[in-house]
Length: 304
Image (cartoon, rainbow, N blue to C red; front, side, top):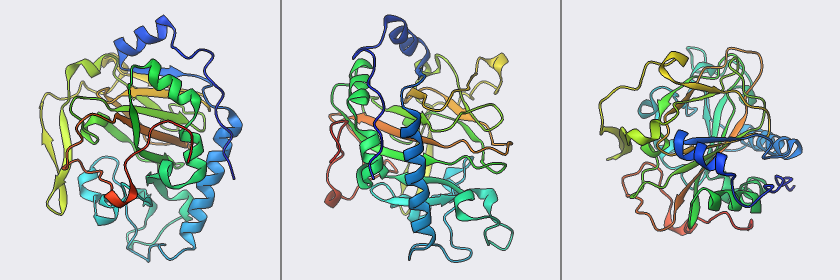
C-alpha cells in the first residue's frame, strides 16, 4: 500500500511574505499542502497498524498499557516509552481507562499517539514523509542538510483527547546549535472544539526555557529560564491555528505552542515530523535515542 504523495509546492521557494511571517512568528501555516486522499491513506494505514497491535503479541494486558500524559510527560516516561525512538509503539490516553485499569473503549478510540519511528519503519509513513515537496520546503526554510528524527501519529480522541500544555519542541529534541523544526500535518479539520493548535507568535525569540532529558533509568526536566509562559488566552497574544484537512503547520523548535483538549464528538488526527540538521550536536542525554544498529537518521530524500 502506497500513500498518495502531497502535491508539489507551486514554487521551490517561499514567497517573501511567507518567509517574513516565518522569521517573525516562528510558525507558518500552509493550507492545502497535502492532498485529501493522502490524508485518508495515512489515516487508513494508522488504523491498520492499530488493528495489528490490538491483535498482536504486544497488545497490553489489563493494567499494563503505556499511558502518555499530555500534562506531565515525566510521570509516564516508562521503559516502553524511552525505548521508542527507533520503534513503532502505541500510547494510550490518560482518560481511556477506568479505575481498574481496563480500557473503557476500543483501542482505536483510546490511543493518544503512535511513535516515534513511523517515518523510518513503515513504508506508507516513509513515503508520506519523504517527498520533493517537503524537501523543497525544508530548503526554503533554510535547512541545509536536515534529517528526520522523530514522527508521531496523534489521535486527539473525541471527548477524551487531552490538552497539551505550552511547550517548545526543542525542550525534547535539543541540538547545539538550535536546529529543530516541526512539521505538523492536519489529517482532519482542526477546530477550537476538537483541540486545534495554539501558538505564541514571536515567542521563539525568547530562547529555550527547559530541557527534558534522561537521568539514570528515568527522565528529568532541567529549567533554563523560570519565567512563566504568558497566561493562556488571546489577550496574552496566543493565536488559534484552526486549519482544514491537508494543512501543514511548520513550527520552529523554539516556538511556544499548545493544544486544547477535545471536547467534541469529532477526532482531530494529525501527523508530525521533527527534523534537525545532520551536523548539529545531538546530546546523549536527550530522551529520544536510536540504537546504532538501526542506522543513522535519513533526510527528506526518496523513500527507501
